[in-house]
Image: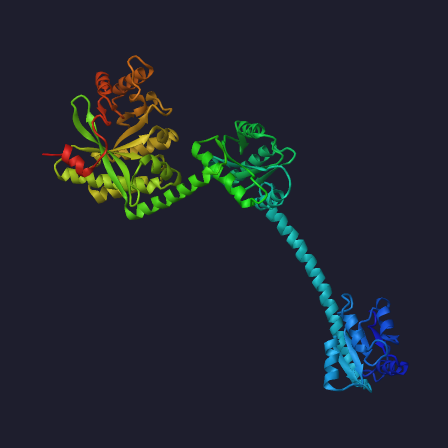
Length: 582
């Protein structure tokens, strides 16, 4: 181990000899020893000049020297970054308090009075060298620690900037890139935000392991569309985003989008299964250098949401009007949530008429929203929002309960033959608690279930036919009647319907409104009614608005009908005045 290096600065060589003699004697051994390397400088300039060569661990600095006194030398050394940590002991004959304070103000770490006492000098030198050595060790440790922190920071940054599953750049990386590129003079940027439509269904059906394999396969397929200046990042569970620069024109952008759609027309082979997926895309173009990354991402996300509302395999390019639409939709969704809590939903009832006898057969319960500020809100405005948010499930059960309560009230009034038809949404039909909720409400309202009809759309029963068959059988076992709503607009067939315990079909208003003698709709409706009669299914025609439509439907033996020709949907109080008088 190298001996500590001590630089003695004094204009009197005799003083150096005294210090050398004192430090050459070991108090512990009681004899001379060679513990230090001593170096001598006769003035301040020489001391400063020899620092690099000597590399002192301690400086013993005389105060009273010509040209540069010890205070000035001390200040100079402490101003040098590479030497400021070296301890300095001022050796002085000045013992006044102001003199000693001046030593400390100059930057000295300690001082010792002349004449120098051997024991005091040895103790102070050992103490200062020990402190300096500890400081050096700490400096080495800090350097190592900083290197470790830097390495770990780099590792964490790599983890943050890279998606662990797909090895694609992450959302954080994309934001960082956008921050840099939006500030540059590059041509406009484009974000293509991609959402996989059926991924959650696959994940739920096959498990997360298969879902992870599918995400890797999706990432690999999307990477095939990378070109110069294009980057791909994974944004979330089933969401990806292309960052495009050097966009030539809109046609080249649309060609890129259609190529992605085309690539998803082929199935993914995962876990020995062929899995088909579709995607929706939202596109946002940068507007100016002042635009923030989060704003551009929000624009792309908003456009993607609008695309999803249009249906599968859709894309939308962002425009400013979308922000207003999103804001209005958020307000609407908040109002709908409050409407459930404040019981703002009410039921109107549209009469269903026996077309052969022209007598009342029952009613269809239709939900209406009485907004405290806007008044009556059109169902066309709020029902799609309830479908997308899932609020249709709790609202649907509120409708079912209110309809059962009203039906019970009318039965108690003596109108025991009245039936009420209630719409069951696709989300409700897929809800795991549907049967339990229906059983609870039937028990609470004590209504006769035989007077209830549940209207289910074609898509609800055909999306998962086996499950739908089991569920409709459960409902029929409770004596609840089942009707297929909007029949003819989906992809079911009359031949397939015999597997379902269905009581009736409702012909969609789009067919009724366009009935023309010997026209296409004429034959479609005529065929549906004829085959339904053979299967023992009743038929209800929706949207009857003219006498001609009514007479034609009567002619082809359609059993029931409803529409504005008979009456519009009415609140229960008006229904009672018009239809339920003794």
